[in-house]
Length: 425
Image 1 (cartoon, one colour):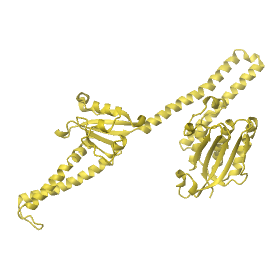
Image 2 (cartoon, one colour):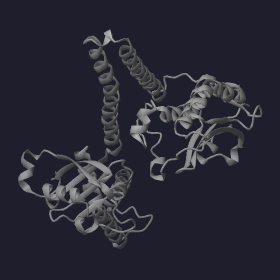
Image 3 (cartoon, helix red, strand yellow):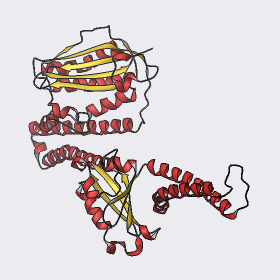
């Protein structure tokens, strides 16, 4: 690819010369004796000059195409000379390196246009002659932008297509920020899963060892230890189930069998499942809309799973004497959030709101609540038996239906989670 780029650069760099040569050739042709529009003079000079004009026209057309290709490249391309001055930068390089838009960079020092230390270190490296033994390109990663959030893989090579370009260098930039972000997410996920598994496994192993060492002879102690083992075993089971569910949703392996559903029946089923837990916690469950919930186009099992997760979370983080309220209403397409309002053929959505009077969530944490294993209060979440995957599962269930999810919260006043599913036709 770099060889092709070098050829393109030679052509682009010479473009202005060809344009001038063509102009001179046309002037000469016009001034030659007998050079009229209908002239057929067999003058060799006249024919030669006119042939040169035609060839220059062809070359200029090729240059236009090459310049268009360079400007349209997905990769950023930057050419510098031996002094570190910019010879050429395409539009993508301007975007990636945050170079001043609408200005010519030719002849200006790169250090004047960009202050990213990684990039300037790379430029110093490519300008050192000893680094080019064997003529092999230098491949290096640099971080640019505020906080180094953009990671670029740079392939740098020296150009030698012409003598006057011997000290020119071409740098091709590939944006790999998304790849690095995914790799970090994978590392975080493995670390989180390992931590979540280690805690219950250590407890199970410890209590089992104690039982084998003689605690079985004390029925009361043995029963208490066995109840603890059962509790941690259940926690492991929930974690594994949630991991499998989330994996299937993210990979699109979960079949969504959407059909017209009675929203009020599903809300009632959720309340029936969690009523006993709410009573123990001293939390009131409220459904003021009763049977007037609009019909929703959804997979009944997945919709119930999403609402159960939200109501269960709300009960956990609401102190005794508080309440959890579930409401639903029809949202017209014009009222829906932009990301779903543009859905073709979808006139309306059903918005379920699960609101509690609990402890609330700090504003800086709201955007991360749906991340896997993210917890605002890690110690309390584990104490309450949470896996840290519930909201991530809810988000993927809603997205699989073509809907959206949003969260609003205020400390010590409560949290409201809004789920928007397509309305039944």
